[in-house]
Image (cartoon, rainbow, N blue to C red; front, top):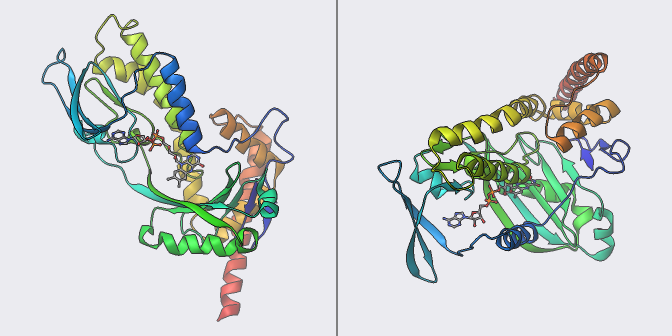
Length: 343
Ligand SMILES: Cc1cc2nc3c(=O)[nH]c(=O)nc-3n(C[C@H](O)[C@H](O)[C@H](O)COP(=O)(O)OP(=O)(O)OC[C@H]3O[C@@H](n4cnc5c(N)ncnc54)[C@H](O)[C@@H]3O)c2cc1C
């Protein structure tokens, strides 16, 4: 991976620090999703391709929930004991149980098929760009998607301007993507924090429906998959393999508490990092400068790959904090001098 600063300072991230068995996978959702659906089906899940329109919430703890759905213009219902709402950021399940709202960022990306010689450059490389021109509070990216690339950006504070920021990233990479053909355009909300309620009655929310996307990296696929699995396993355990009705208390104890103790610290830490490093071009220059440090890279990959805050070396941590402050101050001074020169 390369990370590129507002002034185009470029740092290689990972080529030296990743161990031989470690990698950062890039995937196409259409491929992953159909693989997961097929795997669920071959393990015994009964798939019903349909649009869920709403839920009827029962008034007692023993009656079933009624799921209303339409398929091929036919309205149908399904009575169920427990629901896992995995229906994304615009979750109707969340709405039906009055789970409350979260603030959302917006992410926009174009999937672009490049001429062969240009695709070669991105065959094994992801790029992350930071700067006021590409996002006021997040980053922009070029990610390889097997036979094409995804070029995109995200923002929370300037959603109406998302297309201007998309033009920004396209300009930054124009020499690398010229001649490419846009094959798909995608835009979607990204939750900024967990919902106020993630379990109510016998309904639990997972993935984007619950609000599990980390700040800083905008990573949500791992957390969607992991929360779905944890919630499913919690239901199997609490229902004693389907013999006993589960309760809200069971879902909170077996799923929510487990989830929070495993991941909440990481979510809070990444929130802090986003606020420190994505707020101004000076801070972004400092971020890229710091990313050149091997210790910073190792800590980042250990946390990213193994999904827990890595335990570092105390003296190296002290050095890293001092370097961070040094870089932030230095870049702020340079920014101020540049502003003065402009005047
Ligand atoms: C442009 C963009 C780029 C991103 N890049 C990355 C990345 O590089 N890495 C990363 O980790 N994350 C990335 N994310 C975030 C990631 O996509 C999400 O966090 C992740 O997809 C959440 O998974 P999910 O299953 O919870 O929700 P979703 O992927 O949104 O899936 C929800 C599913 O529910 C279905 N559904 C919704 N409503 C209904 C209904 N009423 N009836 C029936 N079905 C319904 C939808 O069709 C969909 O299949 C990106 C997001 C965007 C928008």
